[in-house]
Structure formats: C-alpha cells, structure tokens
Amino acid sequence: MKQLIVITGASSGIGAAMAQAFSAKGHPLLLLARRVEPMEALQLENTICTSVDVTDATAMKAAIAAAEEKFGPVGGLINNAGVMLLGAADVQDPAEWSQMLNVNVMGVLNGIHAVLAGMKARKTGTIINISSVAGRKTFPNHAAYCATKFAVHALTENIREEVAMDDVRMITIAPGAVETPLLSHTTNDEIKSGYEDWKEFMGGIIEPKSIADAAIFAFEQPQNVCVREIVLATTRQQ
Ligand code: NDP
Image (cartoon, rainbow, N blue to C red; front, side, top):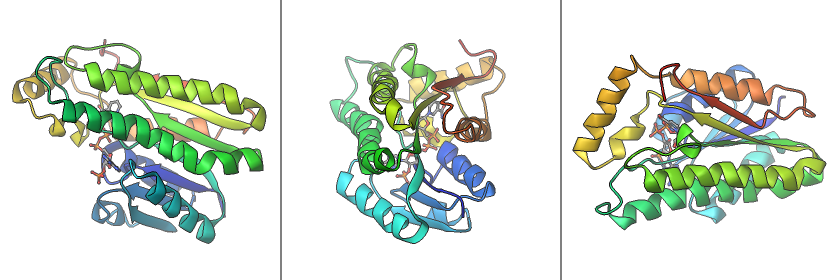
C-alpha cells in the first residue's frame, strides 16, 4: 500500500481537492478538520476522517498516531487548514488576529511537531505547507493574514534547512486567489464585495484542483528532489 498522507482542512475547498487527488493516486488518508461530515461525504477509500482543531496539538498527535496504527508511518503531511479574516488594522477585532495566528501558524507548527521526529528517524517524509501569494506580497486589509502567511514561508524554509540532511522535504505551495468559501468568513461586507469585484476584474480565479495538482507534482518527485516552493495564480493576478 502507498504511504499515508495527512491533510488538514480537508472539509472544504483546497483540502478537499487535495484529498480527492491523493486518494486517486492510491494513498490511504487521514483527513482532519473540525467538521467531519463534509470529509466523510467525499467517500474516499482507505480514509479516516477525524474531527480535530489544528490549534489542539494533543488531539492532532493522537489522531495521527491512530492513523499510523492502521496504515503505517505517515509519508506526507499537508498543512492546509487556514482562515482569512480581512479587516483594516485600526478597526479589526484583535480576536480575529488571534484566530488567524493560532490556526494559520500554530496549526502548521502543531502538524509539523506531530510528524517530524518520525520522518527524521525514518530518513524520509514530505511536509507541504499551504501559504499564499499573501505570504509573498502584501494587500490592503490583509495585515494579520499576510503576517501569518509570511510566517508559513519563513518556518517552512527554516525547517527545510534543519532537516535537509535527514532527507525530509519541506515544501511551500503559495496559491493566488482560489474559488473556495475562504472569503466568506470575513465579517466586513464592504471588503468582501471589493474582493468579489477584484475576482471579476481578473476574469475569474483558479480552481482548487490546480493547487492539488501542484501538490501531487511536488510530492511525486523522487525523494532526493525537493520542490521548495510553488507560487501559482491566475495569469492576471498581481
Ligand atoms: P476553505 O474555507 O474552503 O477551507 C478552510 C479549511 O480549513 C476548512 O476545511 C476548515 O475546516 C479548516 N479549518 C479552519 N479552521 C480550522 C481549525 N481551527 N482546525 C481545523 N481545521 C480548520 O478555504 P481554502 O480551501 O481556500 O483554504 C485552504 C488553505 O489555502 C488556507 O490555508 C488558505 O489560507 C489557503 N489559501 C487559500 C486561497 C484562496 O483564495 N482560497 C489563496 C491562498 C491560500 P473546518 O471549518 O471544518 O474546521
């Protein structure tokens, strides 16, 4: 059987597309998100779906250990769970900043902490962290979100240097705007409608499957080849 792949945030959007893509390649999966029903609705073979909040390091470790009991050691972790709550820095509720920092940064670190020691010991493994074009450049009303995604780039590159000699691959995938419910959680309606206008101006945005295809491309390279970073967006996105 192929290697176990763990995907966070698999109940929606990019994570669900990743789950479908890796399952189609024959991998057993552990899917993690707070909502189990949408993950189960994907009806994927050899797949465990567990309700885990990625900010809960203990729960994440326990879920991964249980999946390893069934499918063997984790070969790949895709830290995809994330939230984007846009707002102007002087008015945004700092609770939204905390949520983004906790999910988008601590959640990624929690995932890495759960699998990295095992991967180092086995001298193999791949961790793909989903950042964003907003982890490479800034946009109005994105201060805290950009801060979390710049952090994802930084921690991925930092850990890549730490574990390179252990043959563990650390990969960043940074999508531009993708058609998912991500924007719907932003509470400011004016910012939301401005974002929708921007999408229209660009003539549409990319589908989650394109991000999943990029992950498959990176994962399927030989273990001694590390695609360090993929940035992909519509041709028209700035
Ligand atoms: P969605 O809103 O469709 O999906 C977000 C996923 O994250 C859901 O499965 C959600 O599951 C999960 N999630 C959120 N909070 C938690 C939590 N505390 N614990 C566990 N899971 C959580 O958005 P996308 O698919 O678009 O986003 C996926 C990733 O891609 C994010 O990191 C996002 O920042 C990034 N991205 C998205 C872009 C876009 O334009 N869509 C562009 C660039 C990057 P549940 O609610 O069930 O817990």
